[in-house]
Image 1 (cartoon, rainbow, N blue to C red):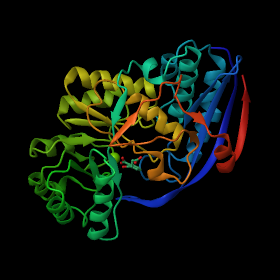
Image 2 (image 1 turned 60 degrees about the horizontal axis):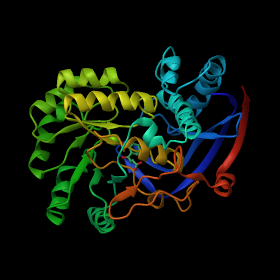
Image 3 (image 1 turned 135 degrees about the vertical axis):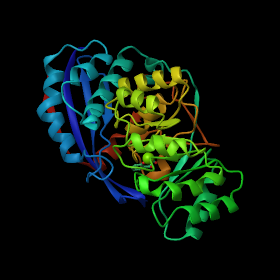
Length: 369
Ligand SMILES: O=C(O)CCC(=O)c1ccccc1C(=O)O
Ligand SMILES: [Mg+2]
């Protein structure tokens, strides 16, 4: 691909409502939009998903910029790229920093799909025209607030409800929720808030008919999760622990989970996400697409990935309006009856809303190839 220029746009956006997990509360999001421009004027876009603080993983907005500028962009400049699948191998010598890698690799995928006049979904091999959507609800001030919030999103049609839990906001809360919503597909996400010493406590969740429990134990663990899965009938889903196909294989061999949440940023890009998907399809592990409170570009990438066959469970790919007063894409991502219609325009399939980009852009840097 005759790449001419890369732009990195630094954006600041404010979520409509604060979002609280076991590790902290977010409302202001700073991130990068990557824009890769070829000699014909095609533009491919990616989004960095690291947060400002290393609470979810070790990456931050600042480490993303450092790693992109000092290591990854030089690799892109020095190599002729014909297909986006080359990028993850070219980036492989750089350890981890998967969200930085993904922000650039995503722009290469979008540019490639646009040049080939394919939707990003089709370029990845996805066939679904609509995807099922769930929603992730942060920790609320009171159980009543939580129940009202769930009711709101159940009424809006979301196909499953994910509830964030932490010690002190878990068994009793979920029991109350289950009483109000006996038949709703419900799951819990602990974001690594428990340890092996909490196994007996976590077993109390087993009679609540949860779809799964996401990442109950340490962010880097797969051994204790296997011990937990062995004594629980509720499926364990791994999020933070899975950074690669290799991690997935090891978790599978140990029996650490029955479900995997695939986040493009966490695994270093769409190519690795697809490799994990293919492995899980082969082994019968269900997967779904996780979220990082993305703006429109990242959200569009998630929608495209979810069209692959083994994404059999609703993802955390809620509509733009769940997060933002105004998103940076036109049209915004819309959820109706718990479904998103996959766009049929080339690449990510949504246009950049240049006016919104201007509003949220703090600065732009240009790199000439
Ligand atoms: O709606 C979303 O984008 C996902 C929300 C979510 O659960 C989440 C948000 C921030 C960090 C981690 C997570 C997570 O999936 O664990
Ligand atoms: Mg999670």
